[in-house]
Image (cartoon, rainbow, N blue to C red; front, side, top):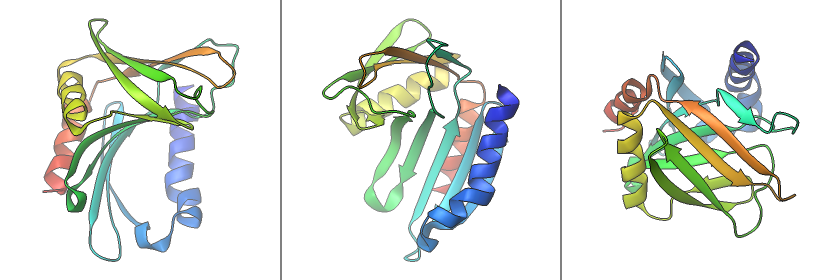
Length: 173
């Protein structure tokens, strides 16, 4: 499973994404792999940087459903004064009007709003709280409801999170 995920990421980022991402964002640099997280920076033609880190889930539930290729990102967009933007993307649309529950180490809970196949924090303050909690945590579980009313969950490791976060923060100063 891990090898398939890594193969997908490698294939997507180095072969497929240059074909589908506009040339304005094709100048992407891999800052490094930090255990279960990878960090990237890319520049648009106007010179604005976007720095982000990405992880794939370690497990998905229920196992009998097709989950697509879900991933979790943290993004900095200095030109827009955006820092620590939390985003989960899944391979299907979430139920309209539903929220995604983010649980860090079984004790800290946060809620994200959904739109299509993605989920985000409502405020930059919530993004900051979630990112700080993830730095101190060991895993995060994302729970949502699909458009077909299936309850789904994904467990992500936070191993390497702080190092990847430091890499994108340094790159997007």
